[in-house]
Image 1 (cartoon, one colour):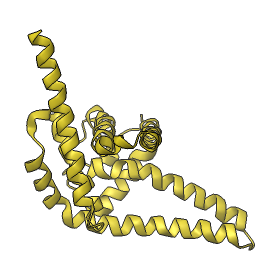
Image 2: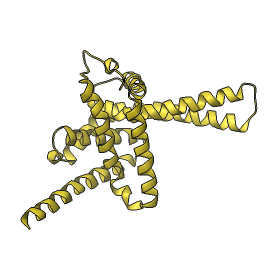
Image 3: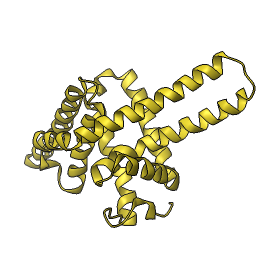
Image 4: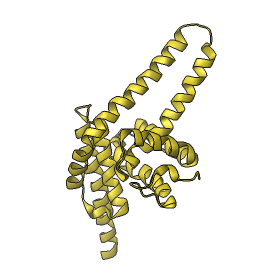
Length: 210
């Protein structure tokens, strides 16, 4: 009976940590301009849970990581959303207007959009795991998205599945972000650990494809 009670409270404690982290993430996303910074902080906390222990905490590491990633997060957000808007505009133009080379432009836009989504998987795991410039984040996200394409598509499938589940089970929004963050970083961390990547004197680009 005692063992069952301990397991119950342990599960409850873990669930509470995920719930609190998700709520913090949502609150710090409210200013909109801090969405990427807040997401980086959330991924960073789940990284600490994975590499250290889930008892590491929530509030202190989240606030610390939010502060550390605030400037870079805002810069990356403007750039990444800007690129996304360009792709959306390209789709809009291609679908509404007829012009020479329309099919080619449409194909290139689809290809660029797929690469955009694939790179998005690695932005935050790289951001919290290594000290990289925005240029370094983009360069290594591109490399990993192609070099570890199996993991990339698995992460995208998980994102899609969680999105569908949240649509039909709205209450999942309360833990959607933090659980997804933990799962995605866990998969990305397998790549980091597998290749023993150490950034600083070395580059993620030294990773060999899966």
